[in-house]
Image (cartoon, rainbow, N blue to C red; front, side, top):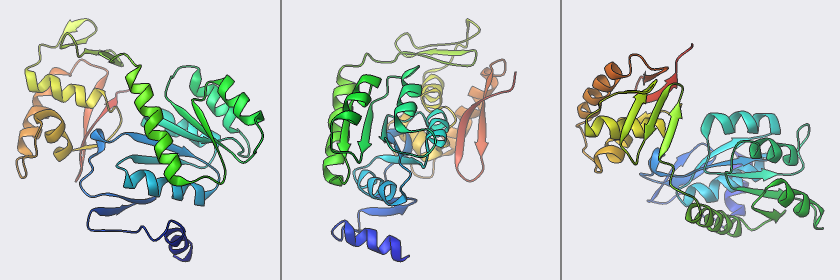
Length: 261
């Protein structure tokens, strides 16, 4: 409790307000919804650095995942598929350079590296490994948020839209509005297809009924979550031959998972 209070004092008293809600790792704007908010993975072996980054990022509407070491970072990265990674260089065991190298093998996700060294060695090595930017500790958390936003704007501006997506033997093409299992057309209705896209874009992530209503139907329809349940039931029947399934998360909603071969 004392450590948390000290952190709140450290960030100039910017604690909870009428527009924020408490979540693990800090505060975020009330009403922010999972699939609509970009996810940031913060990797640092110092808890206070992770807390500080999460506090400011969540207040700007980002969802934050945390990892305390390199091995955990790679695991969390695969599980959550973040929009961006904030990565400390100096960590015990697998350092940030090795984590960056592993991520860059298959992914082009933006990486902002943190270093405690004031010289250019870490910067040069990090950039050569594929990092997009770096900051020196101690850093201004407001500058960190500004850099995160700028990097994401540049990344999204230069990235081609991802129309074709694949999970197991299920393929979805947003541009053609086609969904296939082993090259066999699923023949989905309009909202069934849109619902499937929401799941495929967030594999393994639990989505609430309200999140799905807002994402697929484009509005909040309080109390009418039965609409989602009915469409999920229809979609499940059409995915019966796929290597994926829509799992019910009791008291939360649904998530798309791969089924054992």
